[in-house]
Every structure is written in structure tokens, then in C-alpha cells.
Length: 344
Picture 1 (cartoon, rainbow, N blue to C red):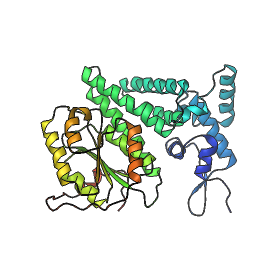
Picture 2 (picture 1 turned 45 degrees about the vertical axis):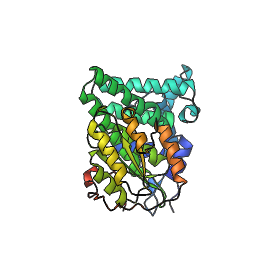
Picture 3 (picture 1 turned 135 degrees about the vertical axis):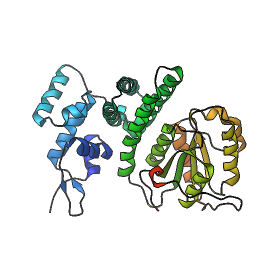
């Protein structure tokens, strides 16, 4: 019988996440762990020691691409040299979002600055590596709330000010979408997890905020289906009904003065089946606040509020949404716009 530890044990002992371990194996061939008869990875003591060494090196700022193939002896020497120079790795408490420390905030600011510099170079691979380091240093929610979300705001501000091009936003969004996608595919959830459908309404083409809501929902135990940007109201409701979702979440970023969006939001409220909750957020949601209040939509200010609101809704009884007689929901969004996972 093969012996070894599960990926959850390896993650707990090395301070990494299962997501990062899998990503390092797939992208950089860091390890080749044994497999159980059922096909699950089994990590030996030597495997976990190597993971720990590489994790410590990345916390010192070394890109994973530059250390993944180094032998263990060289990694140890690198860490010994850093310790002698009094360059300690990021403290363990900085990896926990619930602990707001100056060092954690400083680390987040440094990571955001690195992303912006990589973005100027149009270097998607570097951004991907920085996101991995942020995941290790700050944890998943820290990555979402302290790095990706504020970086997206900075990119949007730069685009409006003319200091950044639309290309920069597209590169960042594509890289984040790919990074979050690997998380969705690796994430486990219970069969009875409440379901949420996320999209941007017609006329809203900026999707990064919606992607972050989907990742946040998954991380707090919801079964999230991300439909994509710029969708008609009937498509969104139709998909939510078919998924037997409890919540529809919409992201509004730009433009801020679309008169048609006021009509679409009111249309969504009119067609919304009983038992299906509506949540609307994003940096542009404030411009539609009067309409959102009139239709009774929840309007969280940030990702932490999103998580808190979903926790509250989770405690409410599940009602199976059914379309109203006057609604004609369109078929669910095409497969290419579905979440990177979608279970029937």
C-alpha cells in the first residue's frame, strides 16, 4: 500500500493552499507525487519538505518560475543567506485576512505595485506569478480584497484618466479570469450548497467585479455560476431558474449614465420569481442607487459585505424559484459563457 499525506495535509503543513500546490505542479512541474489506488495525490515527507522550501523562497520575493527547479540544497542555502541578512519571510499572521497588520497591508501594497509594473510591460506571466505569491502571503480572501479588487480600481481610474489603455484592463482581466478559473475547478463544495448566479447586465461589459463576486461566493461555501458580461435580463433570470439559484448577483462598473439600465433593473424586479434574491454591486452601482433602492436590491459596498450578505441569506429557507406568468426567460447562456464549472 502506498503511503503519503493528502493534499489537504500537505497544505496545512506547508502554509500553502491546495490551489497553489496544484498550480505549481501543473505549471512548473515542481513535484511528481505518488497516487493512491483511487488516483488521489499522496505527498511524502520529502515532497512536503520541498514544498515548504519553495514556499519560503517565494515569500522572500523570488518568482516561483526561478526557484521551482532548484535543488533542495540550493534552496536551503538561499534561505540561510536571507536569514543571515535578516530578511525574514512574511509573518504567518499576515496570511490571515482576519488579522489586519501593518506588515500585511504593506505586503499587499507592494504586490499591487508589482502588478501595475508588470501591467505596464504587458507581462501576463509575471502578473500570474505575483497573484500566486499574494495567495501564499495573504490567503485567498486577502488576495481578492487587498490585491485584486483595489488593483482593478486603480486600473479603472488609470483608464479614465488616460494613463492606461483598454489593453491593460483586458490583460489584467484575462489573467485574473484564468487564475480564478483554476480555483473554481479545484474548489470543493457540499452537494446542498446554496446556488448563486453572477453576471453583468446588458450594456455592462466590464466583468472583473463579477468574477470577484463569484470567487468570494465560492470561498464562503456557495455554488457559483458565472454567466459572463453584457447579458439580457431574461437570459440571467432564465439561467437562475434552471440552476434553482437562491441569489442573482449583478456587477455594475461603467457607464454610469445608461438610462436603459434603469429600465432593465426595474424589468428584472418585475420578472424576478418569488424566492430569488437580487444583489447588485460594483464601483458604478452608486450611480443607480435610487433605482436599486426602489426595486429592493441588496447593495453591498465591497467583497467583505458580499460575504456577510451571503452568510445571512444562507440561513433563510430555500424557495424554489419559478418564473412568473408574464416572464419568458430565455435559454441559459451559451456554454462558453458558463462558469468554469456548472453542475446540473
